Amino acid sequence: MRMGILQTGRTPEQLIGQFGDYDQLFSALLDGGDFNCTTYKVVDGQFPVALDAADGWLITGSKSGVNDGQPWIARLEALVREIFESEKPLIGICFGHQLVAKALGGTVERSSGGWIVGPTAYLRNDLGLTQTLLAWHQDQVTRLPTDAAVLASSEDCAYSILRYGERALTYQAHPEFGAAFIKGLVKFRGAELPAPLKKHANSADDAMICRKAIRAEIRSFLLRQSDGWRRQGEELP
Image (cartoon, rainbow, N blue to C red; front, side, top):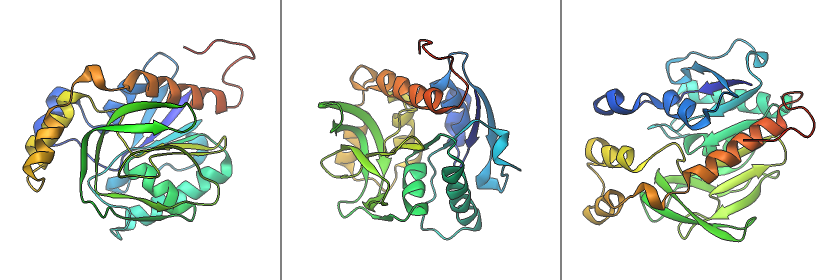
C-alpha cells in the first residue's frame, strides 16, 4: 500500500540521530512490508501534486497549532477535505487529529487544564477497556464534527480517538512515541512544563504503553479501507 505521510513537524535536532524525524517514526510504526511510504514535508510547503500519489494518508504531530494561521496549515486543511471526499483512508495523530476535526467542521481550542503530557489512560468506549498512550498537547478538540464518532476519552480530553466511518481514524495521543522519545521531548522542549508534569512524563515506561495494539488498529484500518489492496479473506498481520 502506498502511504503518503504529511509531515507537519520535526523531531528536535538533539534527538534525530537516535530516533529519526517524524516521518521515520511513522514508517517504523507501520512497518511490516505492507506499506511503501512517501513523505511530503507540508510544514515546508511540500505538498502532493495529486491525491492518487498514495492509497492512504497520514498526518503527523507538530509543534504548531491548527489555529496558528500559517499558510501551510490552511492549505493542509483544504487537502484534508479533498482526501475525505476521495474516500482514501486517512490517519491523524495529535495535530493531525485536531486538523481533521477542524477541517470537517469541529472546533479546536486550548485545554482549560493546560498541558497534557506523558502516560495517559484512555477509556475505549468501543472496546470496553482502558489503554495507556503517551500524550503531548495543550490544544484539543472541543466540539465534534457531524461525522465523528468518539472511540475514546481521557480524564482531561473528551474526544481522544475519533472515527469518521470508513474514511478517517484519528488519535490525540502519540502511538509513534516510546518512553525514551518523550523523555527526550521533556529535556529539549519541556522548558515551560511545570515540574510535576515533567516528573510524570519521565515516569513513562514502554511496558505500560499500548503501542502494539494501536499499531495493529491503524494498520488494520488502512489495509481494510484500501480498495483492492487485500484479497477477500486474507489475514491481516
